[in-house]
Length: 393
Ligand code: PLP
Image (cartoon, rainbow, N blue to C red):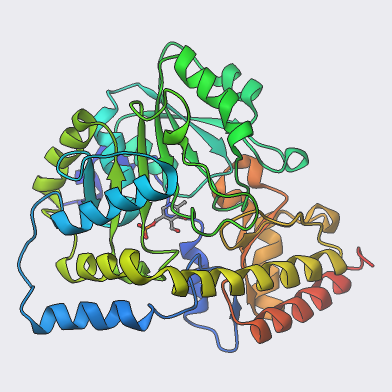
């Protein structure tokens, strides 16, 4: 009998396509002189005091597994941090779990709560992992369109319309990847009322919390009645530029954290010890480094968005994260055509909005976590490209 690896694949994977972002990474690796606005990753190195702490911990022999839940010291620092900043109290012992980045926290949250056929509601466009992770957990993703005219914010009426008797989880992300939109406390209150009325659980991915440029970030769990029913996800990848160190955390009630820990202990065991050591240093002494990076992102944000508007790609000023999400409708191209041609003809890599959901079509995602001279060059090239299409000023 001939052996067919394809026939052996788990059926759950059949409907899952590779991330629309990957294609651009693969193309990029074969090209020279490309300016990439495609990668959702800080261009800064990990602040040196964090790296030094991590190296020191290695040299001191801190190389064994930690507790499944993560180093108690890190959980205590996180607990103090959330209490100090937002008045949110989580017990370090059993209400906080250290994860392998927010990616693992997301997967654990969904696997811990989803039964086959449960519906998980999310904004469209949204981060590329949400839909596949929901499907892998046996759930059904339900997309709530968000609109440019409303700043890509989750509209309570649209949310209410998406709810059915199978709805179980509302998956939130603000500030948002890919739109940079965030939600204020006043905008979140009607969402919380709907959550309560329909007895939903909220998984709130707040990984860009520190990268908020206007009003202070408001964690969903801090809204009246929401702490018990929310799993707060956060991590060190974005604010501390620690993407490759793979460390994040989940905070919630004991039951949810217990369920997540059950999966985590059999699948990941623990987050990397060295990275947990670095994360402690980051939270304790990293504020100045974060502030410095956020200040720089803010300057780039204004410069880049202004430049996009000048070349005719309409873009509102994003309130958080490090993404601009301009409209490319004026060009008449699909977002994929736009990005393919921009890369081939002008060597600038951006990501088609359609990679993040149907409502992302007509837009492209540009990560401005890149040095000013590169952003300037990218804008020049994009300007030439758009001008060459003969559609803009
Ligand atoms: N959530 C969002 C919204 C993201 O944009 C990303 C990374 O781009 C992640 C989660 C993954 O984060 P981590 O590196 O902590 O796994």
